Image 1 (cartoon, rainbow, N blue to C red):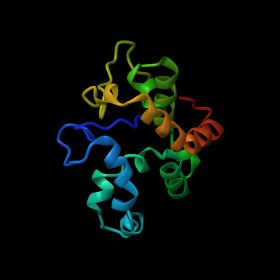
Image 2: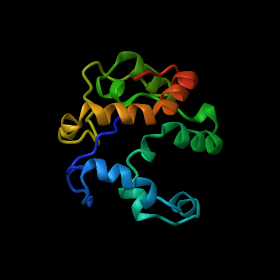
Image 3: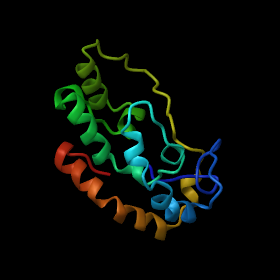
Image 4: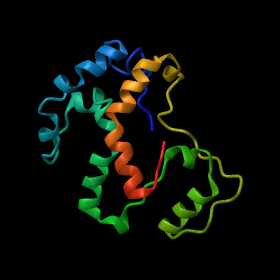
Length: 149
């Protein structure tokens, strides 16, 4: 799971103009009302798309919406770290879920949204703060799926 954002606050190509700490502080104000707006068919919200750093890391909220729409049997939850590392168990579960033949042993899965190393510049104090804010997510994922970070 990633909470790092770059350009000081968002990755390359981002429209973020604030430093990381200020962008995180401004997130709740920027997102005010966006959750309600994006619930409407065909509606998008620029702030939700570009300024929801912590909110997009709250996987339990997102997953509960998917589970309500599609049901547990039609949703597979994997850690991207395991997929990108080509963990054999992760790949086996993916193929089984999709009902396809196992991947070749030497398959390369390209990383997406991995950033350009911006996470290395995040202070330990901010990392600790983000871990604390995401604690409900970590607890939910461990209880629901046995996943730990």
